[in-house]
Image (cartoon, rainbow, N blue to C red; front, side, top):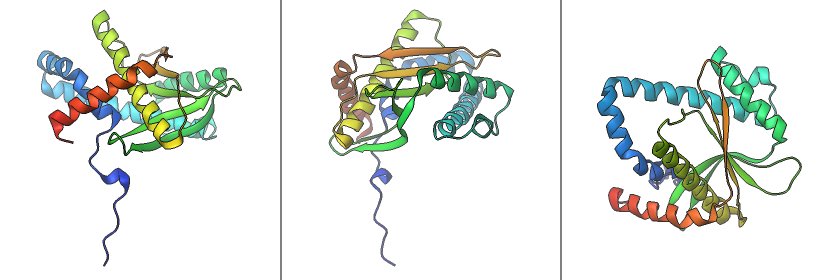
Length: 213
């Protein structure tokens, strides 16, 4: 039988998040040392599961599913988290252009999937929206590092979208919902993404030096 041609996404080019993970290695070492490997592994697994469920829920909602269907399979806490996100979407009158679209850069050799690319309140200006379920760092330096990482993440998506569609996106909003008993929604808006592109590409080159791809 003839071999199937590989999808452009079956290559080993790294994702935006894989590239940015090199920024948190020191924090990961400290976290594992302070908590122990088993506890950290369990927290990470639980966090990824919750994050995946919330992402799928908001994706279904933005694709037109009623909340009852979008929240299917979620526990009470997760339903509260999702309700906060959907309320925010309704308040902002989000009009999705792309939802969870996988993109690939042939020029810079990396992949990425933006959660949502949309417009707001009937406007025409495109913005990237990314959903987060991580906790807020209490240390100011750690918080500053987290926000910097968000900005670089947005820059990666901007580069991917520009290469694929020829459109320059200048705004990104990171919407974070906490896992507290009473979930709290925070937003971080970035309008200076252009200046972060060259820094993201520098990280791409550093990643290549470390990983060889």
